[in-house]
Length: 145
Image 1 (cartoon, rainbow, N blue to C red):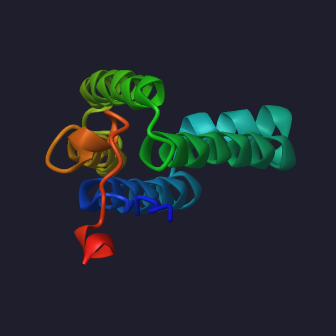
Image 2 (cartoon, rainbow, N blue to C red; image 1 turned 180 degrees about the horizontal axis):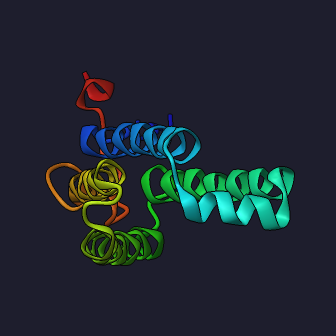
């Protein structure tokens, strides 16, 4: 008789995924709805359809990285996301410093989204997620009852 280990996704990994998906949805809404002269210039130059295609590809890549970092247990993607979020924090702060008083709400949204992403990534490095990335299966003890 073979007993198979039941592996459940840790709560912190689920928290990471859920928060990142919410942040991505908010980011898409902010990108589409708020006034953004840079976006408008790109759309005027290349057209709406190519811009939407690029937006869809970028969003698809984020969804893939979130999925692979969480459920795929990829340490490489997890650390790549850390680099992206740290770079995003620097860029958001720099952008806010340059554009201050011109579009403060957009800057606040960008900084808040990036800070929330940092919180989400924190879930991957704490609690029950640490063992998840060590590739140790978590065995459901009720299997042996």
